Amino acid sequence: RHALHLAVAGAVAGPAVLRITKAHAAEFSLKAANNTPVSHPLTIYMTKAADAIREETGGKVDIKLFPNNQLGGDTDMLSQLRSGALEFFTLSPLILATLVPAASISGVGFAWSSYDKLWPAMDGDFGAHVRAQIEKSGLFAFDRIWENGFRQTTSSSRPILKPEDFKGFKIRVPPSPMWTSMFKAFDAAPMTINFAEVYSALQTRIAEGQENPLTLIDNAKLYEVQKYLSKTNHMWDGFWLLSNGKVWRGLPQDVKTVVAKHFNAQAVAQRADMAQRAGTTEQDLKARGLDIRDVDTKAFQAKLQSAGFYKEWKGKFGDDAWALLEKHTGPIA
Ligand code: X2X
Image 1 (tube, rainbow, N blue to C red):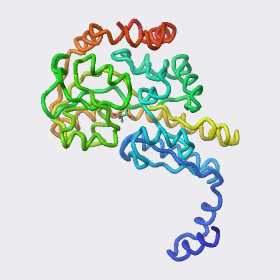
Image 2: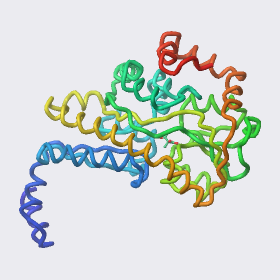
Image 3: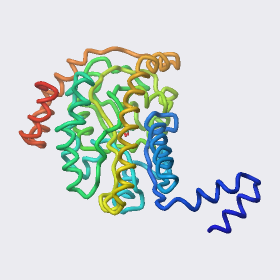
Image 4: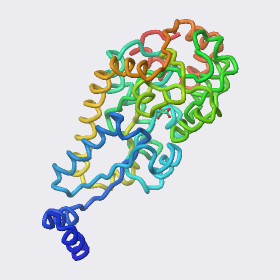
């Protein structure tokens, strides 16, 4: 290995000494992956974390990031994480719920009225409750959840202005029981598709619409294949940074400390960056031609209520977990 790197570095007449040092120094070569474009703050701040970790360990810990579904869709990456082929992966709590049912509780419809309630809950006892369930499944979740955002609805066929407009609406949702349940409660026709295939599903009109936070709609250029955006604000979504429990426990304590420190710090920085972008992103989407509408979100919540959505999910999560959620959100429904 040494000789090969020397030869390659020499051939391109680059800074050979530096290259050899780096190639030699990485004792832990690890992979991280996500489903967001390279321009999305999730990717930007995961990259910053990997850089900070490489720097602080003097190149000993080298985390290579594979963004934008380069390693496959979310369900593929989750399998890779579980098998140990992938060391770090960010995933929505709701998709994680295919493995850890308790995890989707942070995504209950219209539960969070502000980030002032949300972040302390996710960083406090409520998030700890979820992470404990995640650990039981053999995965490890880092303390600080990353931001995706409040989700809004887009469409190529017609604007969704009232709950009734959802009737029969062919909407792509991520692979997750709660998403399917929510859009069935709206009387829509949800279809589960990994984010990796969303652009083409919208372009070919397999799906009429989808729902995602503004930042992702912008970064993934969904405005190219969608016409309307309704500010339904129907749920908050984040990304747990996960590791395979066995792989994580197998790393030396000093490595774990540095890795966790930087990932958690950059998660908090990423949240702040996302908050800063909020206003300009909406302007940008308008300028890109999306027809953006405000809607009466209370009417949408009332529809979930009358369809039995809250009763069903409170039953699934159990009274204790639901009480812990409402301790932070206030009464939900
Ligand atoms: O799949 C989606 O829509 C995304 C990117 O928001 C999630 O990761 C849940």
